[in-house]
Amino acid sequence: MFVGIDLGTSALKAVLVDDAQQVVATSTRPLRISTPHPGWSEQAPQDWWAALIQAMDALAADHRGEMAAVTGIGLSGQQHGAVLLDAHGAVLRPCILWNDERAARECVEFERRFPRSRQVCGTIAMPGFTAPKLIWVARHEPDIFRATRHVLLPKAWLRYRLCGEMIEDMSDASGSLWLDVGQRRWCPDALAATGLSPAAMPALVDGTQRAGMLHQDLVGRWGMTARPVIAGSAGDNAAGAVGLGAVRPGSSFLSLGTSGVVWVTTDRFRPHPDGGVHAFCHTVPRTWHQMGVTLSAASSLAWWARMAGLPVADLLAELPPRVDRPSPVMFLPYLSGDRTPHDDPDIRGAFAGLSHDTTRADMTQAVLEGVAFSFRDVVDVMAQAGSDITQADVIGGGSRSLLWVSILSTITGLSLNRLAHGAVDGAFGAARLARIAVTGESVDTVCLPPQREATIHPDPALVEGYRTRLACYRALYPAIRRAFARPPSDHG
Image (cartoon, rainbow, N blue to C red; front, side, top):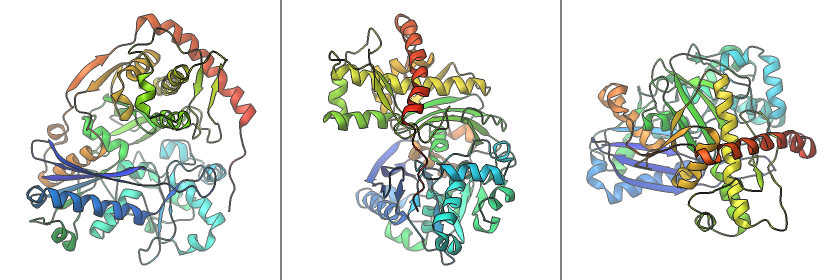
């Protein structure tokens, strides 16, 4: 038996997976985000730990036999967060999260101090990444910066609490801007640009390696017969790729979750920072990937549901099973800024084309289409980066809507595979990594693709209409940018 733990932004999830790779049990605990200033996004690491203990306690209470047989634990986690620790390992401040926007000014400073950053780190410096956050802390919270002795990413901090080891995997480390991605090692010049040394960084491993043993007191608490191995594990997107079997060069997927991701596995480091494409290490050995991100995907629909005062399911029920034309309304899903292709933390979303005849259904359809247009932007810039995708698996909460997947397929021009088992996610991928770390099995043996339920192809009757609307969508970005762009946040 193996446990996969996924530290998400809105919840922590733990799953029990048996030797046949079947999910036996799941336990989830919610998490809250703090926004002390506009554009800020923080969480208390202690809340992650409390959620982990509660989730694992629940599994141990309800599935004693299965928990007794656990031999490995894998971790998946939200990337880019900065957990700052003092010399005694105590947390110095709340973690600054991946979707925090405060460090735009510091991104410019980081690239000025480290001019080779884009070629070495595989991406443009963006406020969500970890390194600019440390420059911000040094500038605005100098006492905390001076006390900082170690910086851990979110899931690495959970590992530290589980086993006492400071260890990070290659995929999560890539998103820090401190990794020499091609060489798969910490980059002293990148660290020096943020006033840190390699001594502040955890040890590096591949996600399939052994990277700690569970503390004995937790072994007893959860009724485990033997002391489980903790795998090197993975950042959330890489763990999702492992769960999907996207471990071989050319395999790809789209994640229609809180944020949106387009992923392609590659056999080498292929940086193409222009347009906001990330070239990072995969969590499996000698493998990399290219990735583009749209920051507000399913979260755009969740926002619209709050504004409309209805559950998402009720809004979707107002739409037909298949749309016969584009919505007369347009929606720009820049609620948290944009990463790929614009690298613009200050842009904001908008509805356009409203009239007295506009219906709520028109606006809901526009949200689905706007998110799909943002995916089309990502797919196009990925093609410029050398990853020309024609089909992909689609995962994430939004993939449960057949209508949304159909719209996404038509707008992006991709054939999209819906999966038979929607539970394939970061926690499941983490459990797979735990199995490999324990058994030594090959990645190809364990990381098989899931069963595909159906393949959705672009709707020929809508292709031309959406091509016209895509041009309108792209014309709106510079207009909105000029009209509503705000200066970067500079709160102290």
